[in-house]
Image 1 (spheres, rainbow, N blue to C red):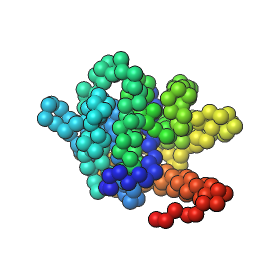
Image 2 (image 1 turned 60 degrees about the vertical axis):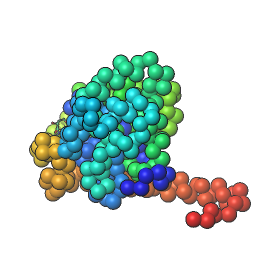
Image 3 (image 1 turned 120 degrees about the vertical axis):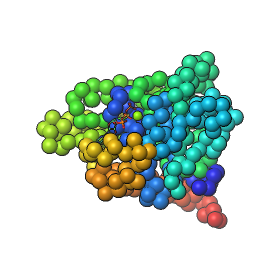
Length: 299
Ligand SMILES: Nc1ncnc2c1ncn2[C@@H]1O[C@H](COP(=O)(O)OP(=O)(O)OP(=O)(O)O)[C@@H](O)[C@H]1O
Ligand SMILES: [Mg+2]
């Protein structure tokens, strides 16, 4: 993976303060699917539970001699992202977590830049990875705030239950607060429905409610004004629940299981959306040059 290529980087926080909704499963398997599409992907495990780290078969750091983890990255700004990265497959890598990460909340409490430690570390890495996926812990503490300060986009994994909808207002409010105070580029890209059962009628009602809510927000000026419900929903699939205990992604464990098919299709949609955004940005740069009468840069 070329370090420091300065290519555009898409940093996505997989966030929901509710526990057990599919954040880690989505982070790991979406990342693996994007890597299978030929893009370089880095997972950063922001959760002291270290579930993403274990899911990809990396031993969470422990002890003095182990390589640095996301805890070290947050605590010591002199440590570069590269030093913490462990390879998983050819194009997939992870910055692992360890249980000590829970202590970072208190250890950083007095630091004025405590919310931007992760953002600064990613900025210093200058686009070595095209996609950076941040697996957030359940909760809205300092670790989640660091992820939101570093991300351009939030993807919300959730289940289509009425109860699951209850926390979404608070989640969106947190995103708005971070956009207003710390990270003006932050926006909600959308919701991924996890463990989905389309046969259940109340799931269908929740999907309709969510779709109507986002449609009604298009002119709101809020960070979720362009959010959408990603397709396809991720079906409930036992293979997805089994593969973490083997330290494998679904593509290593059961590449043709329904869970693999769903995450592959989701990745295609996420990558296509990014390619369109990069093309649009390149186009508008070219248009600005034409308007200013400047020549095309020589490659
Ligand atoms: N589509 C699915 N089908 C079956 N099981 C799933 C699916 N998605 C996730 N699971 C299982 O549900 C549980 C919770 O998922 P996961 O760990 O991804 O949630 P989380 O939001 O990251 O949880 P936490 O808040 O604790 O970090 C796990 O045991 C996982 O294997
Ligand atoms: Mg998790």
